[in-house]
Image: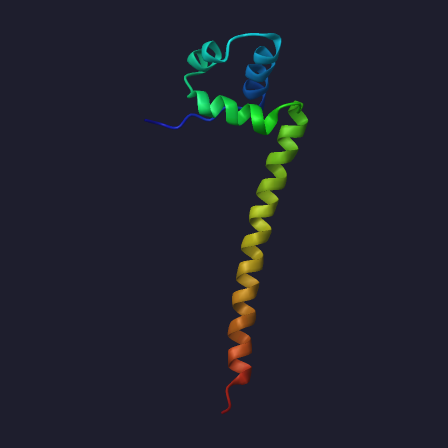
Amino acid sequence: MKKQKFSETQILKALKEYEVGKNAMDICRELGIHNATFYAWNKKYSGMEGNDIKRLKELKEENRRLKKMYAELAMDHSVLKDVISKKF
């Protein structure tokens, strides 16, 4: 089954409906998601606005990119350190 991605606005709309009093099971059925997914969204995005969620995703992407850069630099550093320590 293909994994469906939901936009920030769709997630926020679902959470707002839940806050107003709509049943979580009904929301899950409409979106075609599992209850656990909905409650994970609720835990993660509760109280956020659209731009907050967008900023959070941008920060996660930046964090992923910086971790990758650090790993590459650490590997380069280790290789250069080994080369310098060897006597010719």
